[in-house]
Image (cartoon, rainbow, N blue to C red; front, top):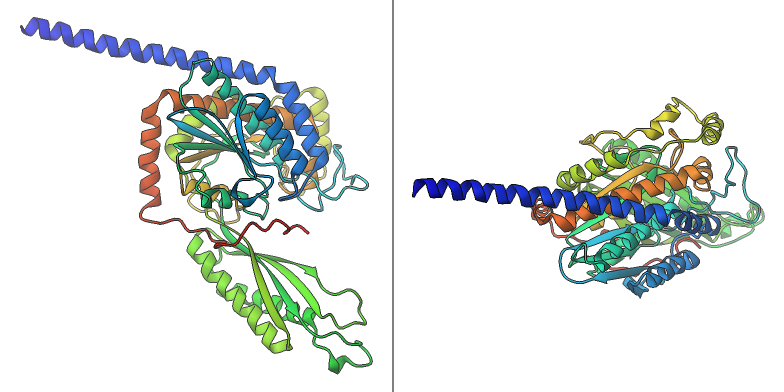
Amino acid sequence: MLKKTIIFFYFFISCISFLKAQSMKDNLVLKNEVKALLDKSYQSDKATTLSLWNWAEVGFKENKSANLHVQHLKEAGFKVDVGVGGMPTAFVATYGTGKPVIGILAEYDALPGLSQAGIPEKSMIEGKSAGHGCGHDLFGTGSVATGIAIKQLIEDGKLKGTIKVYGSPAEEGGGGKVYLVRAGLFNDVDAVIHWHPDNKNEVTMKSALAYKSAKFRFYGISAHAAAQPDQGRSALDAVEAMDNMVNMMREHIPQETRIHYVITNGGKAPNVVPDFAEVFYYVRHPKRDKVVEIFDRVVKAAEGASLGTGTSMKLEVIDGTHDLLLNKTLADAMQSNLEKVGGVIYSEQEKVFARKLQSSFIGNIPLIDDAAKVFPIKLETSSSGAGSTDVGDVSYMVPTVGLSTATWVPGTPAHSWQAVACGATEIGAKGMLNAAKTMAMTAIDLYLQPELIQKAKIEFLKQKGDYQYKALLGDRLPALNYRD
């Protein structure tokens, strides 16, 4: 009896080992297949991103960009819901049935004031004001390509589950994903994958700053600035008084805080006391509760400025996003795939472009060959000095993982003319392809390894704790004209 039990035990172990080896083989085969699919669509995807680069549509105005992505998804066989979350340029594309449900995030908005030709020296394009200084032309295209490649594997019966591509507009200050979260569009999703253009290849393990923004509008009384200044009440004085108070406040807030502002309207003529002025503020901090606290103090400064200048004030909250909840389980899986894909290899012509571009940089300049490196995961304990993203809100609803790839020459700062220039080159397209391959391979892991999703969810719940999500921008409708 003991001998039979031992024989059965070893037979059982052998079966498990065989199934595990077969699963690993299937995984590798599918990853090679999805890479081939993305290589096949590369030229078409590159053409798409160049169209978006040329259009350079700003937040909530990305009509042509969103329509092109929707067209490609529909042609691929996705069911596409357009105008979701109260945003005309938002969409959710779905293919497949059942679990797991994997989401891919796509962005496509440009930045105002960053018009730039695709050359390694500063040169605005006449008649064009915006530019893709954060690479969202690449972002959206790479994500859509990933979704279509995964859809093909589901259609062929090689994967089981559902793929969703989320078209999220106005990431740059409009908070598109916040409205998608608020509308419950991630409630049935098991994991979310995203990426972002950058100057290096690495999996994201650094949180983002939570932030809240608003436009403060002051209303005064116009008068002749020389003949009857006593009859006027300057709205611009109110803006300047507010700015002075906020600038003095910087000494008395946590040092990790970032506060920025621009005066969007300061009057029209020096000899007319301005009866209207507007200033646009961002408040950032690594912790969402601190953002709310500091933002409320900024509001008090605005109220004081209004009182002191005899003007009235109204504010409109424009956006508010959470910090980014990190998931090491998913990050490790993505890191393994990124290392298999590798970095971006430059041709000799691209190296000439890179050297010329780097000559415009300030400070330490990385090696051009850094674009070919994959950097190891480095868990950051502080996000001081980082940017903000509405992916943070998604990360508080579902386990989320992301990466960056070298779509820009090493050392290129985001939101710069240099980043815009790279977006029109093969350098940018190569980085996009690497991101798409890494995301698709990570998605395959999630479809084939239910235990990976389960482990990621356990980590997610532990990280989130008992926090109940609440949008920092409140219950306002999308600020569809915030770029006007």
